[in-house]
Image (cartoon, rainbow, N blue to C red; front, side, top):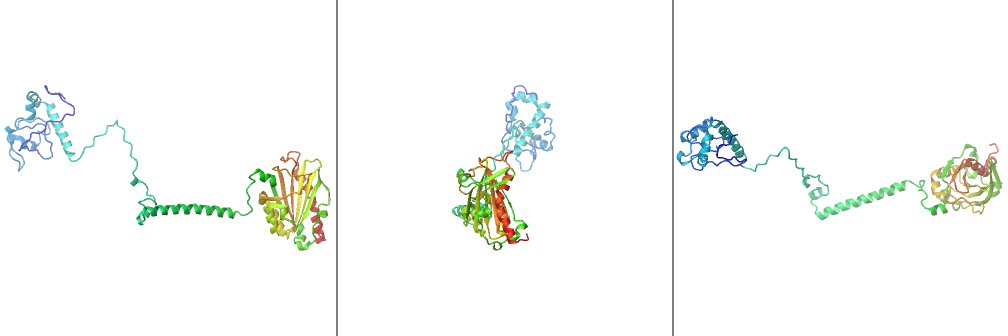
Length: 394
């Protein structure tokens, strides 16, 4: 747009205010013009074609009822008075009309926002402001907060805190009770592993164990009443030397007694006390070359059911209880060494075998623990003799 001579157009400068005084009507729905025209030619543009505009300003005659008459001579044109030469030169140009129409639209836009603050338009290059965090009111309501159900029930802050503390305490107590019940329900069959070196030194036991129930062969002696004759050391450990394959074992110590729980420790002692055990015979062996150590223990129980329960129950209980080896200076099971155990039910008798290397090492290619176990089981010949005695037909 061409700036009229003698005037400097400032960007964003305010337009000249309309002259004050009575009798200056403005047509409804149109903006107040920047420069009032009392008489004279109307510049081309939308305002000049408006009938209300012509009727309001033509000849100085008021266009609306109730509007006082206006004295055209009393209101000089502000723009002409301020710059008569520039105004006269620009009044008849198309740029002037365009500027007048633009000013009318700008004034109308400002008038539509006169009642409240206008929000500045955001530039396209301006980044959007980050959203503010949600207030406390927008957060999910906590059941025990001040605005929760406890407050709706009419509880005081102190009472609400007491309820929360009681709920937490009840949860902790419930968890402890649940843990105690779970541990108690496991029974005595599950025993934790050995935890300390002292336990390994004082309570050696096998690293692996397997048990077998009584076969039908021993049915004649299923009850101890059918075999009332007590055991003797001569019956069980009659041979001082036993052989099996290339393995030769020599008897190092024996023991026979009626205190079955005293010959064991841990869970095995408890099971023996409940199985009606009346006798226990123990024999400790060592190999001729001193490479191996072995033991066999034979228990005289109430019946076959007690014997089966003992050897099968030790499948898990052996970790927490086993047989004590007889005292001997010639052979001893190494503390913390690798050993293997097995159990055999034979009518109302239960036999436990225990074998291992004297140095406590695990078996290598030259070590045959199966043959070693068969050799030490030679003590079971005494039980077979009792089967024949109870039932000669067998």
